Image (cartoon, rainbow, N blue to C red; front, side, top):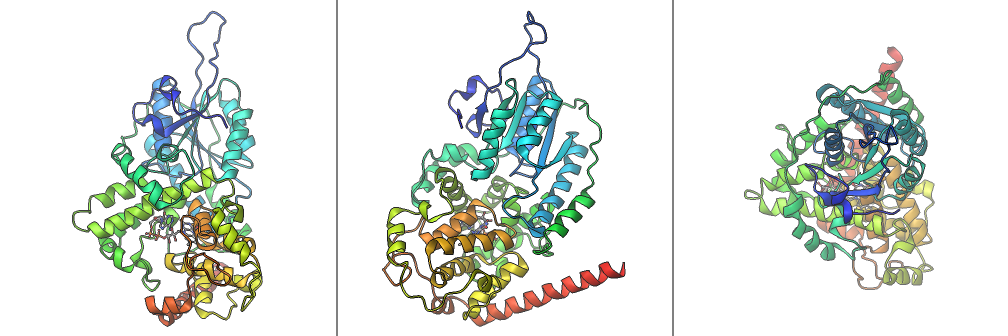
Length: 502
Ligand SMILES: Cc1cc2nc3c(=O)[nH]c(=O)nc-3n(C[C@H](O)[C@H](O)[C@H](O)COP(=O)(O)OP(=O)(O)OC[C@H]3O[C@@H](n4cnc5c(N)ncnc54)[C@H](O)[C@@H]3O)c2cc1C
């Protein structure tokens, strides 16, 4: 896709958003009502919200509003609900739709910006909406995933010549394309680049000011109840989770709520507890919100940074994950077209994995056995069940979990496919660049280095049961997951009974 970040200043006047954060995907040709007229015909601005599903702290929304104010035209937000996106089930769809319901309410009530929801393929619905409302500018947020990039490319072709398209990186603190223009080898090669740019980009957000213009549209009623019911019953195989409330308000509460907010109550133990699967509260718990864009990573970093004087070690460790590791994942998925296959691994890793592909495995399990958690390893089974029933596996266990699959399947490509399939299907934060990179790191050594060569793994970093036993109370974790699964099943049975009674 032809993009331009250099000559942007002549094209965009944005009062609040740094220019580097915006890329022009298409420059529309100005249209005039009359052949002799000197004032161009300017239509409304539409923000196609995809990855950053929030009202607050959203650079794409800020840019859309800015542009509308400058052009003196109305602005609207459009969201397209796909029939299928990377196999999302009730768990992910319910969380997303409930969050969007809040976006709808807040954006219309507090900002008087209309919210349109479409169903079907974005390559059809978005261009046809732009045409219908006579829009002159489409603003979109950024995702490095290939499906989203392909849609944008197609939409760029399909919209009328008079429509401009601006892409805004509202997800990363340092915009992905500003941080680096190439595939980075690892955290050590991107860390300095990001840190040098943080003074420019880790800044407070401007206040959104909409100049209210009437949007000529009717029938904007959205029946969220039916939408949620349909989506969750269609994807009922993987039910919704009860422990993590969706939406921007709950996201802020998780970050800094008075009761059990991460920064308020839990941050101080982050550097010591975050690798202990028995202490899930040792982690922030923010990944579901970050994945759906219900909270901005920049807001999390700004608030965490305020506590650096009191908790320097914990804040630094958190910011390393939140900024460096997370933005490194976007870098990988954007610059590596094979971000979810063996082809995307570095050469040393491919060579070593292929060399050991035929090594004898102690056990070989099918995808079905793995999915049901039916291996000879009770620790692995517990982590699998934590993901299936709770919807989020502890971060430390995710590494062990993925690496073990390499030991139990007949090829690294199959391992990768199974790990991604399970992670995307059951994790509330799945289908994310962090997930693809997490699997690639564990199985294919991406962003890692070569280690002592051993059977099956070759030079890929190895993890085993004995190592886990040294690190944490393995039996305690297995018992904890058993209780978790028992409670989840009990709640599910009660809900089923309630719905039958009513
Ligand atoms: C096999 C495997 C699969 C994974 N799948 C996913 C996934 O589907 N979605 C997902 O968001 N993360 C994934 N991760 C990365 C990491 O495990 C999770 O981000 C983390 O456990 C989320 O919990 P938290 O928000 O409470 O973590 P915290 O430790 O509190 O981290 C805060 C935030 O920093 C970022 N972060 C933390 N660790 C990493 C990391 N290793 N790489 C990139 N960013 C990181 C995340 O955005 C996270 O929400 C995976 C890791 C592995 C090894």
